[in-house]
Image (cartoon, rainbow, N blue to C red; front, side, top):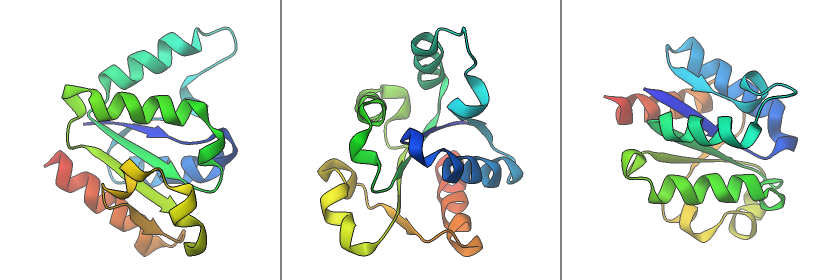
Length: 133
């Protein structure tokens, strides 16, 4: 299973941490910071990565609302037949900001709430494993 991690650019370090945890658990992860290079056709590579993805994990933080790219990636994941039922929303941030920062459609998908602990990362891995199974 190929996993695409959607996140705001300001959340690159935490997305990298998530990618490292998923990779260590044996999953194939596509993360823009590791796959896009100067001179690449970024739109084409992002589009191909989404088409190749089996699971999309969207990292929701207070920065997510600032990212048009995350909005486009989530819209694609919600409508792509090959990803149907395999969009995982992961919320990282103060509980008081969840309702205002989390798009309504992602609230409907029962987001995983994490606080950057080993046990929390394991919740994400377990959810991916369940969908991959």
